[in-house]
Every structure is written in C-alpha cells, then in structure tokens.
Image (cartoon, rainbow, N blue to C red; front, side, top):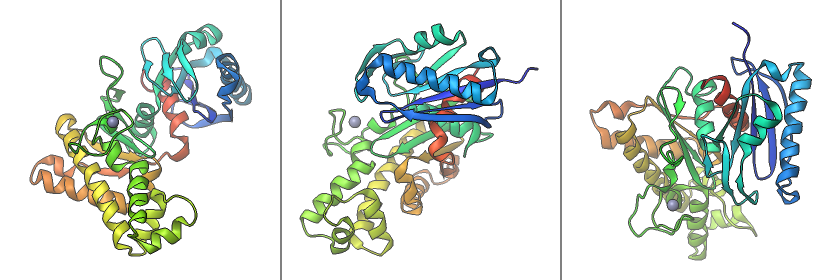
Length: 318
Ligand SMILES: [Zn+2]
C-alpha cells in the first residue's frame, strides 16, 4: 500500500493554520498566516492555497500523493459539497470552498465545521484513540460539539448534528446567542460564567474576584483562580455552571450511548473545577447503568486540534 498523506487546513477568523500529515497523523510540515478576512474572499482563498503549496514544498511531496485536503471552516456548511453557507466572522456567504479547492488542486476535498473536526481529531489522534463512538464538547466562549459514530462524524440531515450548546437545560434561563433561553451555552460557556461573575461583582459578592479582574471585566479564568483560593462565590458559580454542563451531558449520554466523552476548549483548562461537578452529576443520574461509568476526559490535542482534525477528514475518514 502506498503511503497516504493528507493536508488539514484550519480556517479561523484570525488565522489560517495548515499541516501536512502522514497516515498516522504525524505532522511532516506546517505553516500558518493571518486570515485578514477584510481583504475579501479571493485574497483569503489565495492565502489558503499558498499555505497548501508551502507545506507540500516543505515536505517534498507532490500534490498527486495526497489522499486529499480537509478544511475546517466556520459554518453553517454544506458538508456534501463543501460550501460555506454563512460565516459572519469572515464576511462569507455562499462560498463554494470545496469546489474552488477541487479545481485548484485536483484532489478530493472535504470540508467540516471546527467542533466536529476537533471531535474527529481527538478520536483518531487524541484522548479518544481506539474508541469508535465518541461525544466531543468544546467549552470556550461558546459550546460546540462533535458526534463521532463508527469513527465518522455524524453530520445529520441538515449538517446541524452536534450543536450540543443549544440543547435547553433551563426553562426561561438566560438569553442565548441563538435567540432562545436557557441553552447549555447560556449556562456553562466561558461567556456565561463571565456574565454571572460580572453580575456578582456588581452586587459586591467577591472582593477576591474583583481584585483578580482589576480594572477589566472578570473572565472564567479569573473565576477559576478565585475558586482555587477558596472564594465561596466563585466556587459556587463554577459548581452551578458545570452542573448544568453535566445535565446536558446526561441527556446526550441517554441519546447517544457513546464509549467516551471528551471535553476540550479553553474552559476545560479549569480541570477538576469543571470535571468534578460534571462527573458527579453523571454518576448521580445513572446509578447502576453502564452510562454512569462512561469516561469523561479532557481533550489532548490542544492548539493542533483544528488542523489535525481537518487532515483526519481525508486521511482516516475515507
Ligand atoms: Zn442557544
């Protein structure tokens, strides 16, 4: 069997990161550049093409040796054609990204959304190695997810599957960016924690948190630091937020029955402050059911998850 190489391109609002990997997911060459979306679609496309040319040259590999190019893009997307329907942070509407890449490179092109690809990356190269059914959640400014079934991303009928941040966990809860109330994202994301921290400071709840935030706004990281120093307000805030996260996961476990749950994103760096309440509520809800013992673990790929997940779309998923 000939060696299979793949390229992953992670298109972000700030940065384009690209890596060439071998069949085992080892990075042979990588590069990145600024997206500078304000220059328009064509310029961004040319920058993306340029990063692909660069990693091919650096690794000394001909485009014909590629199994394909996987691209992670903000969505919503049409994963079948690789079209980007709408990406407000890039100013993109109906950009046939997959088709344009196919014309330029003449190799198979797959496009997927960031959180789905992160799940795929964790399944093949990270915390979920060897697991075939995996639920991935990213908890950062928002909450996203990826459902991996039989080693493949489950995209659903309308490319919406995996939007775990918008399951509703509290009736008449805080307003979510999607327009509904009480979504998981509005209860347990970094943004939600910061919002509650700010409200708490306004009420004069925590002098320690106020000191950590200084002249700026409190962040989830500040709340974590304060909780580690024993601040009661911050401890309670995190415990409540992540109990909701755990409740969301309880629902998802009931629906999906995965082998493993992997949690990534910046807020997962709060470690036990996040994982303890999540694991507790899951245990509490499932009692003697095997779902009580589904491992809930931290993501392992870190900053590389975008490019590696994108590369796995073409290296591992086909
Ligand atoms: Zn929502």
